[in-house]
Amino acid sequence: MKILLLEDDKYLCDNMKQQLTKEGYIVDACNDGEEGFLLALDRNNGYDLAIIDRMLPVIDGLAIIKAMRNKKMQLPIIIITGMSELQDKIEGLDNGADDYLTKPFHISELSARIRALIRRPAILAEQNCLSYHDLSLDVLKRQLVCKSSHLVLTPTEFHLMSVFLEKPEIVLTREQLIQKVWETDASVESKNLDNYIYFLRKRIRTVESECVLSSVYGSGFILEVKHDTKA
Amino acid sequence: MKILLLEDDKYLCDNMKQQLTKEGYIVDACNDGEEGFLLALDRNNGYDLAIIDRMLPVIDGLAIIKAMRNKKMQLPIIIITGMSELQDKIEGLDNGADDYLTKPFHISELSARIRALIRRPAILAEQNCLSYHDLSLDVLKRQLVCKSSHLVLTPTEFHLMSVFLEKPEIVLTREQLIQKVWETDASVESKNLDNYIYFLRKRIRTVESECVLSSVYGSGFILEVKHDTKA
DNA sequence: TCAATTTGTTTGACTTATGTAATAAATATA
DNA sequence: TATATTTATTACATAAGTCAAACAAATTGA
Image (cartoon, rainbow over the protein chains, first blue to last red):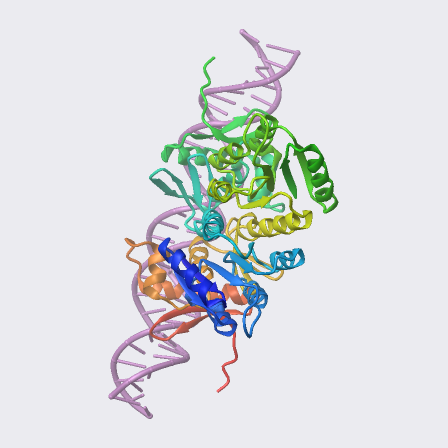
């Protein structure tokens, strides 16, 4: 995990860098706004998170954040600052920062907030997967994953599976499913859906998941955890 | 946007609900841990964010958060609490909360933090897209989008495009690209890569993007914004 | 400038995915 | 239990995607 640290107070900066390094992060620290600006905007640096002081020499911290968001850089950003004015917090958060810490703060609170922020994109973006119970769908590789099994789905299978994984434990009607997967215009026979339901069930069986695509007679289909159906 | 609010102080709870409703959110409020637990874990409610008091009657707020994360519910969660003990903050954040606010807090700070949290999954998960400059890739529909144009890619085109969009403005070697798209084992001819580069360029032209897949002679390819190449 | 190398484009054989139909099984209701 | 309706399974023709070959164009360095 690589962190960019922009803080003009050299003593505090060194202190933070030392602590974060001790926790296993790779830290690029910088005391100057202009240099920090260049570091922040160069994608080759590949930062996973940025900690930026609101007040920096030459270039304002907030301006750096705005520029990063403008270039659609999506990494989490924490602002730290001496100012605790409410308006500053709101301005910072509304301009693209994900968290706001007021000095003085305890380094272990900063650590916990870093972990919280890094965890989130790790689930949502980096792995880029939809998951429910023991099933997950790697959207970039189009793979259905369960434990150690993995299986490449065809495009239509994938799309249908993703619809179920976005709304697990909820009954989806034939209309909703056809709408989502085949779009409005396509005049797809409803029978074709049964076909793909059948294919997906085979896939789910193959990866030995505990999930099932149950049919709800007269209503539609639902993705749920297998449960005993003893009479 | 639908928010779940679990807060046992009825006065504060009503106050918050009123404010958030005024800001356009749909708010389900609840003063009881047991009822809140059921609300939080029912996916049918479709909450986009949860605000949970650390101390709730019957069931602890932290226990609810743990249960939600255990069921792989990925919505952002803010803990609010009267306790400002450092250890409590760290415990809350490390158990799945995304933010931590200590009472008393100003409602407009809560609002700003809500906006910051809702913005993030909106970029990363809900839309489920990779983007750079004017290009974006809808990973569920396998569509390349630019302004109002959109275009369905074939699986291999899609996979290759996603590799470029994950590392824009960075030169990727032929080896890296083949590795990523065709996996290690596949003995794909390097020429086939040129093939797909060619296809993607046509696609990018079709959606009239300002981006190009430039070749870097002897090195590889790079996704970047078109720039004049006047001599 | 020339030759060697790398990259761009077109084409066609081959493989895979899709949608429909036909038939079997299961479910709900009278 | 009988019957209509819904869902499951199998099979197959058509459509689409993939890969590699062959050749054209561009780039680099001698």
